[in-house]
Image (cartoon, rainbow, N blue to C red; front, side, top):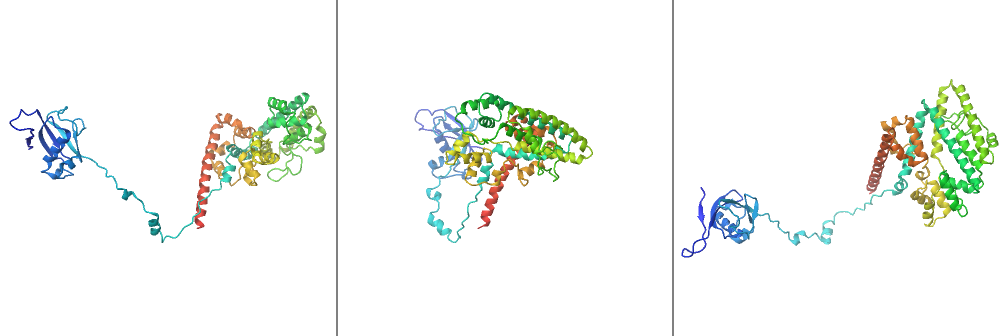
Length: 488
């Protein structure tokens, strides 16, 4: 049973005592005491009065001291009905109800550490404690960032991937039923492009521009007639020729392009299996002499256009003769189809590179000769970082082989070729057309990424490239770190 006591202020002869209130105070360890105090008491006075009552049972308090002032700072009073702190300067008469419960709770006081405890060892103490440990000179692991810088151009990396996948797809389609249609499709594309170029040259010649400047303008503007005309109007009298054969005539350039379209005639032009291709290039069974080709090439663009139509008709007749002659040898037909598709990949992957004038001027400002800068940009496919390395003498295989696709030992190519999604897509004719189109113009990738048949495969290729590129960088650093530690 609890005991109720009365705390009175003043003597018995004075005026009547102020109104009092009955409270119940609970200690941190479960002890309870009922008190009746005046409403004029403050929170601190109430706290000290409660501590005085609990003094007889010290086990109910986690902290106890004979000095109540010091002990009061270690506790706080909390009103149980609203779970709010009853502060030291609050009055009991302010909204405190009769028979209300108060909790006497110990404060959590964070001890401030002394400055000496935070002080670290002095250099002399560290040297004395580590005197017996031998010195270890471990070289910091270094990474060859040159290779990363040379391959940092995403467009160049993706172009090499497209070349490798196009070649693999050419082997698949060369033995399939769509080979003839694909060969005819790209053959017609090349013929149409040559006709358009001849027509553009004829029109510009009639306007009075020189043939050398016309060739240069068409190279810079990628055979876009309006852009070439604007370039000629602005630069015809002042621009210097670069990456152009000044002695070349339009007939020679047209004949050279037609030779690429119609196939090589030399004995060195062989199929991948080692046997010479009967037609070479894109047309099988056409044995045309170099003299005959030169005789059909005239000195004017119009005559070249006429010979283009004649050769196209002759090639169609030759195709019929070839089909009749090789109908009994399907293996030879498939081998020649593979060779023709590989020739298509080669023609589109080895397109002419024209140095970007902005890159030429920016690199020439570093002190290099302008002619050497142009040569470096052509060799590195307009990759500014790789061109600077090329000018400094770092002409590695990764720089020189930008048109050769990825090497067979490339981890990125191994992962791509091992993916079932990529393997299935190599037999899709639409995927082969997409790869060749992106080799011809990299800006068409956005179009093929929105196509239902090719978007998933291209997205998978891009994700795999970024994942493997990150893994290669991590492995390169780990290998460098391991070799550095093993040399110690």
